[in-house]
Image (cartoon, rainbow, N blue to C red; front, side, top):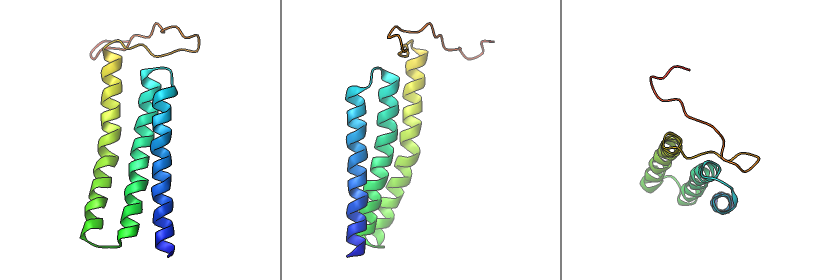
Length: 114
């Protein structure tokens, strides 16, 4: 009974985080803010939802496989988010500023001195 409640709570937290990431994707003003919201919320949402499945399933081979999936997601999602953000910055996608105008931000190229 206690494990079922705990697993349901973890899955609900994961669902809430997925919904928050979706809301951030819809509502936030620019690519970088949207990338931040979806990157954080999707990683943590998957973590909580899959850990809820592990708790519900008990300790067996399927749970071990789910833990490996959690580890892979926890490594791959932040790496992919960083790569997307860096690629956008190097290709000239301007960050949003408080005034709503694109800033005069220019990323430093590799090998270029400040």
